[in-house]
Length: 262
Ligand code: BTN
Image 1: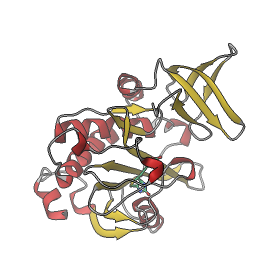
Image 2: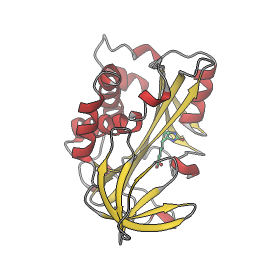
Image 3: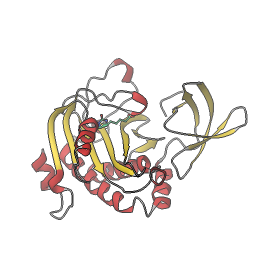
């Protein structure tokens, strides 16, 4: 797999020598975080054939069976305060859409804030984790991306909710998808701190949540409203049924369609 990824990457790609491929890991994000703690350089990439404890946002698990998906984590070291990186998950989502489109001609949608979708179902997701240094700046960021590529037997709770690229197109070469992701993320990383407005505009164009009736689910309960806008910090502006408008934050809530997943 590693060699097939390298064969499809330009010879001057700055992260070429930092790609690790493992047959199995508990979670590529957990492993990448450990490497980052030990000082691994920006551009270190960890890929696994499967994960035994793949993780998602808000403490959820990410189903990661053998050789059916791309399980990918990238270490970045943007030396800036966290408030300049509120759009990181959004930026990674746009890069992931670009990579899927280049690898197989299909452009996924983005369900706020971090899910990739196709045909109204979940194709994959993004888990971004930050660590801070003593000066308060970000010491490292790990961007984890999982994309379902081939069909599999889904656990009961995912049936009807999840899909894979092969449901929509010819069998996908996971190595090709990984190399497109490396290209798209490297491009994103160069624009990350200078081009936030443009990145967020592209996010909005891909966001399938906007304009929809949604259920906003938080530890305090569930409220219904209309998703009106994604702000530049990635928060979602919702007009609730009782008339009040509120910006909801991805660290606290999840959003579902009124009847369906989106
Ligand atoms: C979500 O659905 O909330 C996000 C899912 C993110 C899954 C990816 S798979 C690679 C990386 N390693 C993990 O443990 N999680 C991310």
